[in-house]
Amino acid sequence: MDSNSEPLISPPVTRFAPSPSGHLHVGGARTALFCWAFAKGRGGKFVIRIEDTDQKRSSDAASVGFLKDLEWLGIRWDEGPVYNAPDGSAVGGGPHGPYFQSERLDLYNHHIQRLLDAGSAYEAWDSAEELEAFRKDSLARKEAFRYRFRGEPTAEERAKFAAEGRIPVVRFRSALVAVTIPDEVLGHTVLPAGEVDDFVIRKKDGFPTYHFAVVVDDEFMCVTHVFRAQEHFTNTAKHVLLQDALGFRRPIYGHLSIIKNPDDSKMSKRDKDKVLRKAVKEQGLSAPPANTVTHEEWSSWLASDNVQLSLDGAIALATALQVVLPEINVDDFRRSGYLPEVICNFLALNGWSPGHDIEKFDNAFLKERFGLDRVLKTPAKFDRVKLLAFNTDAMNAMAHDDFVTRCRAHAVIFRPEFLARLNAEQFKLLMLATKERSKTLDEPFKSNAFLLESDESLPFKDDKSVRKALGIGATLEAGAKSGLDHLRAMHSILAACAWEHDALEHAAMEYANVHAGGKIGSVAQPLRIAASGATVSPPIWDTLLLVGKAGTLRRLERCIEWAEALR
Ligand code: GLU
Image (cartoon, rainbow, N blue to C red):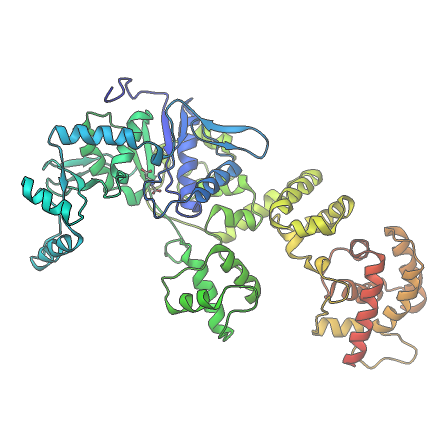
């Protein structure tokens, strides 16, 4: 069978077809979300296909990463690569597989042969140098270079080329006709005859090009609607010509505008390198900080703006330089502690509007309401401040237990050191103590790094508020006690105290009533500095419970010593 006989009618079949050459960008995630919502809201199917025909750029790890990110967002596919979700369920599979293009070569070759037999495609033996010369020639004539059939080589020429080690590509003989690029979002556009060149459909490595594989797969996976990034708009002309030559059905197309930064620049993974380069310059660093990147990586990265650091390298460097990397990929937002339902909501708003001033909604609502009529034609601007506000609202609305469970799930992946450090009760205590001021799931961890420090090396922050709380440099009235004095006294009181919230509070209150005029804050704040190294931490008695008795006492001793040396 050379094409499917089923007509392309409802229920719709959409697909998301990532090239696994990195991480899932938010733009890609939005495309997937729209494809999913369109199909699922109409009783149809959502398919995932991995476009790995560019062998140099594809990797298995990247494919799995894409699937993991989609699953995390709650975007599940009816057909596609099999993926075992963390909840134990399996997603994917289906009757039109395999869903990796690299495993479908026979199918592509069969249809390339059909085109060759029909004279709609031909082998082209040009070397890279020859192609370059053609290009220069066109340039000299101020014409766009469009490859056209250059005549059939003779048997001798073929033999000569083969002897030279040349391998032919297969090119599609594009019909010299005006092509209508169908687009239900931007409107149809007619491309004048002759704009599409004789593009390559099979590369020297035997793999089909993206254009060919996509057309074959959309046909055999019965795809009815193709929604993809606007950068593919002109590619669609090629796909239409191929469909006509192959006798394939034509899906409905919709091209989606890109997502931009508020300053109008493209939201690109290079933004991370930009932030890091700026910090390196500002901090005047001439060598990579310890445990970040190698000297080689560092110099090649600094030598050219086109070189990007690996994700691990960028994270390590950002930590060392104390800068926050802009989130670009789905995984970045996950690491930063954003909720998947908030990301979906926000992404949908960046390119679609439900109308009636509705801004907050879930995927069920999106599925119900999504249609092409309200997809925006112009690029959306990604407003991080608004995203954080959405996330904060969702975090505040979360029930306590839910919050703890979700923080734990976050910690399992991104903050395992906290799980190793805290028992279940302490973990819950920390989460609930931090809940109110947490805008992301990562905040309880990010703002409580003092818990991971060793009691022997916790650094104490030397700033104005710390000095004030400890009474360093202050002249005291006769008989008055400084924060440092309170610390000395509290050491023995705490040493004799049961390590429970009420007992700690009671002991400190009793002391404060006698020695601090009843001002518990004058006692609590020095204790906080000693236990956490600075003036901000969870409520004081929780902080002490989390640090533990032995740890608190040791930290107090070290803080006293440190403060005495400052005086
Ligand atoms: N593999 C293409 C990409 O990652 C998608 C092509 C398509 O959706 O047709 O941009």
